[in-house]
Image 1 (cartoon, each protein chain N blue to C red):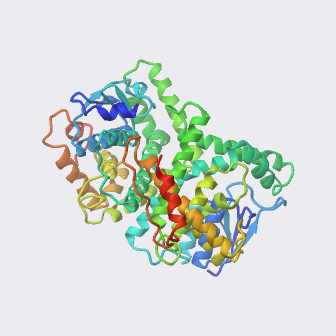
Image 2 (image 1 turned 90 degrees about the horizontal axis):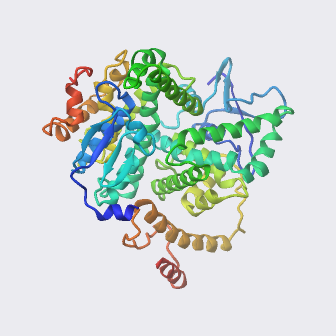
Image 3 (image 1 turned 120 degrees about the vertical axis):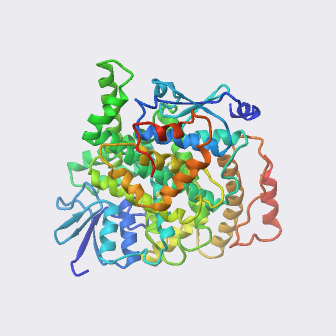
Length: 268
Length: 312
């Protein structure tokens, strides 16, 4: 399957599917989508963002975002990076083996801590669940389907949190974990423009996706974004990538649009 | 410092101080940082705690998870990471995340889910250390929790059956072991010559995999080919735990020859593994084998074997 994928060049009509931007998409999915968009921009591969209410069900793995390229459908950043590599584009070819190991380790750190913290906040913090998550997640559907789907998803996420030992954590502990993760990222980034100095890699795309979303999404409190704002080099990193890869592109670009949309507070 | 600290954890066997990865991590860290811990292994009496092991008890404070226990020890000024730079501290966190995401599922599977391993090794071992009738229930519960964790974190579409999930987690675990091996290289520990938190975690995860004699051993076989990781575990066992390493091969020159043979095989297998990991396309160009800098291949006979092995 991948052999045939490699033979075709990247088509003009490649599409990235996510949930509806204004009303439905949640923090964690927005972060994932932005990470993939940033990655594709860094590889110079054009993709248009398509918003669909049922995107989650169209995805082959149930997770978002997914891209539709030619007649292939690939979801999630990891498989998309491999798919793009099979087509001959890679951001991490210039790294040596130890650096590649480091890059993979840091990507796991972001998934292990940041993404899990986002999921915790969205689905296990009762206030956020009632006021933001349930209304948004079920918004395309009529009552009672919206409530049923929300509760089903919440139950699924809470089971997972319990299995990995996060169910017993308090919100403060989760925020401390976020802080620890941001501190590690900040220390690793240092004063460099990107994590592996001159050239961005998929790690930069992933970190940008999560941090930019955290910084620009309005939640019940600002505690989450404050944790990230404590680290000046991380906010500068996000601004740099936004300016370089998202501004000046067509108005449909999701990151630029989301930075302007009313629901999000802007990066200062 | 003044207050005595007691650690309750699972005991050991097969040359290890403990079979339980988290217990082993804490014990290793205590040795590295010089913390005076009295270790109580769990036995058949009802007084020792069974859940949430390892548990550190210091006067009235009870702490249960490895990360929290290590934090507590650091606050008590038993800090093995004293000399690390900020970036190295960040790397520690990242590599621990890598271990938990990529290696832990396969480790749990090898111990608790793989039927032959569980029934012939894990269950009898743990059951013998738990008082009746809890011994009938607790190992089963630990096994179900392990399977649950694997399925919830790694299962789900497009992997629809348990065998597909198993294949994926073992692939990820082997890749993780390769990455660790590359990162360790030829140094004694991950950050130079003194062991740190990361060494404790890696040791805690790898040593049980390395030493316990299981009937189904695919991950162990892979680990044994990564000789620098095996050497890392053995070093820690001999230096910090003063346990003699009961090797499987006879001592002396035979071991050296056997190691050399294993190394030439390792070079081939590693380059094949690197192909599979990095290239999904089958028509990638063949890479020449990497040389391991520490040991030099013996001249003549040893060299011809790897070259002939390369052609697919």
